[in-house]
Length: 172
View 1 (cartoon, rainbow, N blue to C red):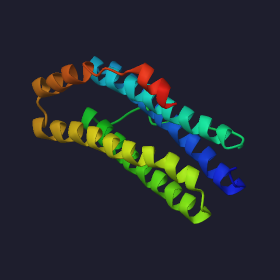
View 2 (view 1 turned 180 degrees about the horizontal axis):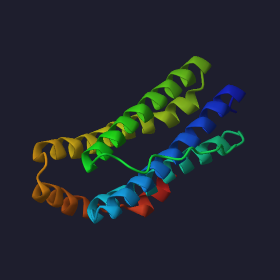
View 3 (view 1 turned 120 degrees about the horizontal axis):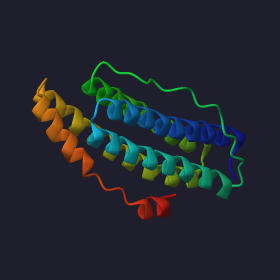
């Protein structure tokens, strides 16, 4: 059984995961507008992944006898100074998500909620992967600087991202 405070904290994280999906969909639209279909594809895949993360929290709250209370999701930005600025924004966003997951983990420990601690360990590991994947893209973009050829090369690479929705569905 979740404590009321833990339930509230997990509901806040559900909102944050859906906001992440919304943000990445906004970025996909931005990249599509620039003709960077690979970046857009990558962000749409990220949107699906973040939605599954939200649903994983949703399912957990229900399984623990809590009540999911969906909250208002703020509008994400719609414009960035450059593709690099957009990806740096996303990397910083993932760093914020990591902080939030870590605070949830600390809170679960404080509450003596071992089941939530175990549940959150998956997200702790996931955030290492998220920061790494965004960080690699940002680093590549910094290496190419203002090279249109380099940007299109990265765009082609990102177009190859395969998202296994069956695997995500099992996680949720």
